[in-house]
Image (cartoon, rainbow, N blue to C red; front, side, top):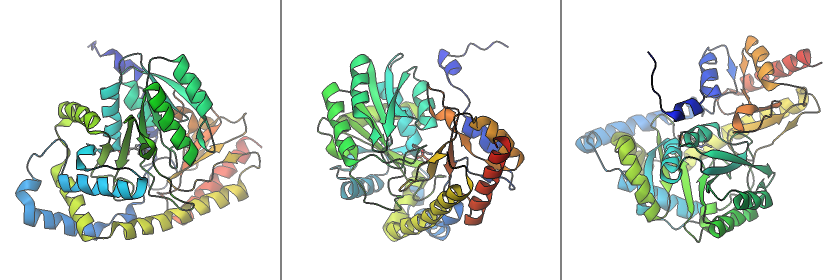
Amino acid sequence: MEYKYAKRISQIKASEIRELLKLTEKPEVISFAGGLPAPELFPMEEIKWASSHVLTHNGEQALQYSSTEGFTPLRKWIADRMNAQLGTSFCDENILITHGSQQALDLSGKVFLDEGDVVLCESPTYLAAISAFRAYGCEFVEIETDTEGMIMSDLERALQTHPTSKLIYVIPNFQNPTGRTWSLKRRQQLADLSAKYHVAVIEDNPYGELRYEGEPLPSVKSFDRSGNVVYTGTFSKIFCPGYRIGWAAAETDVIRKYVLVKQGADLQCNTMAQMIISAYLENYDIDAHILSIREVYRRRRDIAISTIRRYFPSDIKYTVPEGGLFLWLELNEKINAAKLLEKCLEHNVAFVPGNSFFPNKQKLNTLRINFSNMQDDKIAEGLIRMSEVLSHMFP
Ligand code: PMP
């Protein structure tokens, strides 16, 4: 059968990470490949209580259709927390509950992108954002980054040379894949440039609450005087990803457009999941929970860094993230990370080669390490195994 697929299908590649994750499901594999939180940290007992509480007291509401915008008490909680932590001034009407922040990215493409439009992004950037936007037929222009974030003179030049620029997509905290964090100044400058050129910013912040050192910084959205910034957040990394509850936060006019396209996508998010999270937030201390997650991930980051420092070749470059789940390695230019992965898989160790995080460029000697999902001893063991494979392949 010859199917007459839409053009966009040929533009979307199977995600290298998803294909890889299939191989890494074997229990003997030490996987640094996914972006998975540590499952032993999910608040299991509290979730059991909250589920039963919701079903006992509001069961009919929880099992019924509900509004596209989302469960109002949850939207209020999100707005209040963002205002307290990120310098925004939102109310519930600025918040749309989405199916993970991933859906907020997809809806952003649906709301903003026509075929041939340009998305400006960090180089490298989050793989599944590339897939989400690419489905709308956009082109990517990669902007170089340094230790403070996107280089603003490069961004401005790109905005001038690409008049069809529609979105600037950024992850200012503990970026996926590099782990880097933007300085305060760059955040302000980005908000200013987006106003000057009338281009929307998608500020994606799934990891902001997972800071292990240094001071938290205000969001790009808090400097947004023009209403151009759309913020996306999630419960995936501070609670659990299985419920698939995230959000988009923006000016009410923009949120109304997101609501329209979400109606066509799925009508609404899971009512029960939203109410369970809300019951948890009302009855437990999520800050204490986040503190305990941070403690574990900080330790795992430190183990990863000290093992790399001790065992990897000295010409390797690596980031030391102040938070989040990832660090980024740049190997000697002669080394192909995909080839290294093939060999590592024979030794039951997995990671993601960095090349797929660049929408256009080729950077074959880079790779991403996730340090949140493996137990402490496995992190050291896996990285030592990786270093041994490296020294055999490239003595
Ligand atoms: N943005 C970034 C940068 C991510 O790393 C992820 C998850 N890995 C997401 C968005 C999507 O997360 P979720 O849909 O679970 O909220």
